[in-house]
Amino acid sequence: MERSVKIRTTDLNCFYGETRALDGITAELVRHSVTALIGPSGCGKSSFLRVLNRMNDLIPDTRLEGRIEIDGEDIYAEATDVIDLRRRVGMIFQKSNPFPMSVYDNVAYGVRVNDLARNSKEIDRIVESTLQSAALWDEVKDRLGKSALSLSGGQQQRLCIARALAVRPEILLMDEPASALDPISTAKIEELIYELKRDYTIVIVTHNMQQAARVSDETAFFLSGRLVELSDTKQLFTMPSERETEDYITGRFG
Amino acid sequence: MKGTLDRTVVGLSLTATIIIVLMLLIILVNVAINGWARLSIEFLTTAPQNGMNGGGIFPAIYGTVLLVLLMSIAAVPFGVLVAIYLAEYARTESYLYKVTRLAVNNLAGVPSIVFGLFGLGFFIQTIGGGLDDGFYGGQVVFGQPSIMWASLTMAVLTLPVVIVTVEESFRSVPREYREASLALGATRLQTIFRVVLPQSWAGVMTGTILAVSRGAGEVAPVLFTGAAFFLPYLPTRPNDQFMQLGYHVYVLSTQSPDVEATKPLLYSTVLVLLVLTFLLNITAVLIRKRMRAWNAA
Image: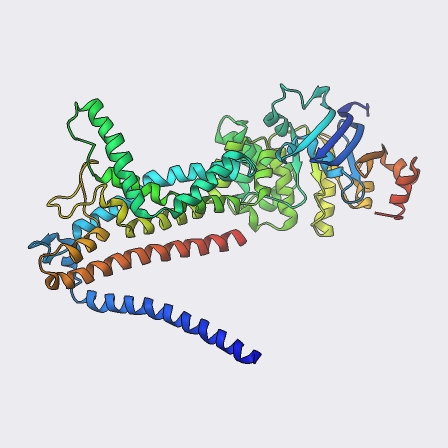
C-alpha cells in the first residue's frame, strides 16, 4: 500500500488554562490505516484526538499552537468551516452515547442535520447501508423504530459507529471505544475497525496494549504530553527505539 | 444533661412541625366543609346575581383560565429563549450571564403588588397610552386596564419560574448528547432544537404548570391592570376587562353590602381556587417524577 499522509501535525502545543496538555507534537498519520494512541492516563492522547476535529474548541480556556493539516489543509485556519470539519472527521466516544431516539433516527440524525439526502427514500438507503457497514443491520433490522437505549452496550457502540459513518466522514476518531464492553462485543468492534480501515483513516485511543497490537498498523506512544514514538505497530511492540516506550510496554510503569 | 437538651430540641422541632401541618389542615378542612355546601354545577356555570349575593362564579373561572392561558403564551416562549441563552450560550463567568442571573433571581423576590404597579405604569400608561396617542388620536383604547395587559404583567411575574425550571432541565441533558451531535457536524442551534429541547419537554411543561399555578393564585398583579369587580359579559377582545377568582374572593370579602349573605359564596369560591391550584401543582410534580424516571432509564 502506498504511504500517503492524511493528517499531519507540526509542533502542536495545547494548553488548558495554565496546564500544558500537548507538548510539541509532530506526527504524520497515514491514510486508510489504523493508528493507535497509547500511553498512561493524562498523557495527552485523548487531547490529541480531540484537537483533530476541534471538539476541544468547546472547552473554555483552551489554547492551541502549531499546525494541524488534513489533506494538506490547515484545519485551524480562519477559513475552516468547523461544522464541515466535524462532519468529515467523525468521533466515537468512550461511553456509547446514542440519542434517546429510535435506532433509525439515530443513524439518520447526521444525514438530516447535514442535509445529505434528497428524500426519505434516500435516508432509508443510507440507514440500511451504514448499519450494514457497522455490522449491526441483521441484529436491528426488525427494530429500527425501537429506542436505541433498548440495545445492548455493544450494539449501542456499533450504532454510534453507524451514526458516525452515515455522514460519510473520511476520518474516524475513536476514544477508547471498547473500554466499557465485554470481550465478545470488544472483538466485534475490533473486527469492525479492521473492516473500516479500507475506507477510512482511523485514529484510536486505547488503554489496552493488546488491543493496540491487534487492530493498528501504526502506534503512537504518548507520555506527559509528548509524542515519544510513532512507528509501525509490530516494530513498536517488539523493538521500540525509545527507552521510555520499552519501559511502558513491558509494564515498568503506567 | 446532654440527653435532656437533645430531647428538648427534638420535642420543639416536632411541635413546630405539627403546628405547621395543623394550620394547613385547619384551613383546608374549614374551606372544604363550608365551601362544599354551596358548590354545584350551577355555581360553576353561572354568573353572580343580586349584587354578588347569589348566582355563581363562571365569569371569574373563565377569566382566570383565559388570563393564565394568555400569560403562558407570553411567558413560556420568552422564558425558554432566556433559558437557552443561560444554559447553552452564556459563559458562567461572563458579565451578561451574571447580570441576567441576578435579574432573574431578584425578579422572583419582588412583591407581587410591585408587579401590579409596574404593569399599570409600563404596559397601560406607557405602551397602551403611547399606542392610543399614536394610532387612535388620544382616544382611550389600549391605555386602560385589560386582560391583555394583565396577562403580560402576570407573565413578567411568572417568568423567573419558567426560566429557572427550563434552564435546570436543559442542564440535566447529558453533555455526551451534545458532543455526539456536534461531532456529527450539527450546529449548536440544531443540537439545541433536535437533541436538547426534545429531552427537556417535561421541564418546559413543569415550568409552565408552575407558572400557571402561581399566576392563577395571584391577585395583586391584576388589581390595577385588568381585573373587574363585576362584568355582565365575558371578555372577547384583548382590551376587555375580566373577572378573576382571586380578585373575586377579595371583592366578596370586602365589597359586599351584606357580608353574612355572601359568606357561603366566598367559601365556595376559595374552595374552587384552592382545588384549581392544587391540581396544577400535583400535575407539575407528577410530570417531574415521570421525567426523572424517564431520564434514569
